[in-house]
Image (cartoon, rainbow, N blue to C red; front, side):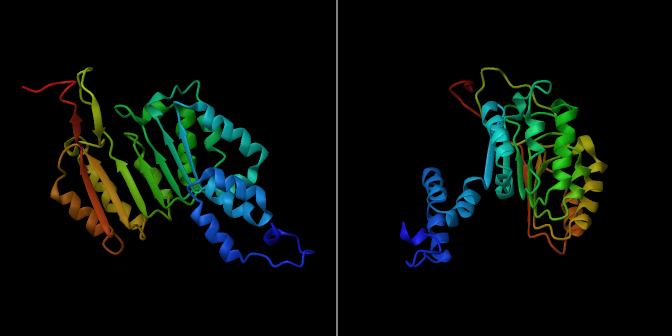
Length: 263
């Protein structure tokens, strides 16, 4: 390991550019990255940056984020490497039991946040006051450029605090889960809003959102029904100087015919 020797060793060091390429090649191999971080002090930072660059939590596997919490307490510098956070399975949350708020408070430098409800989706009201407050503070206090929220009735005004936001995927409020037979296998589904249920609030949000985020590049809106054409016009006029991509996703439910055969 002469390439990684101390300054007293006359043998040449490996250029930093080469070390970076080594780490780039191994970025999907967690075991190799761990080995690299132990091999040389020069590889510690780039290895950890890729090991902890994206953190994934699942409410169904609480041990994972509880372990991360204890790891972060003993190694707080690891939090500086985390840029992306994904929390999955929020539909399984029990507000009085979850330790998720305590864990989320650790993150202060996120650029990307994904909150996935799972199941049939869930409403903001079901998260509990403590988790609601923690999530709102996370939105407001971190330099987020990408937000993907799969929680219905999320307070839309919270996104006005994301001044560096470039991409937003959000369901509008007033969403109601349709009754689906229990024996139907739900394969995939997009959640969102029914445009007739919330009327003017959609236009109000769209007309002011572009002005609040002059650098917004991409906006995705999930909806139950086909929106009125005036909504497209409102969004485009509001963010005419920056918006490069606008996606309106219609809700779709794919049903397994074997579980629920059609005539």
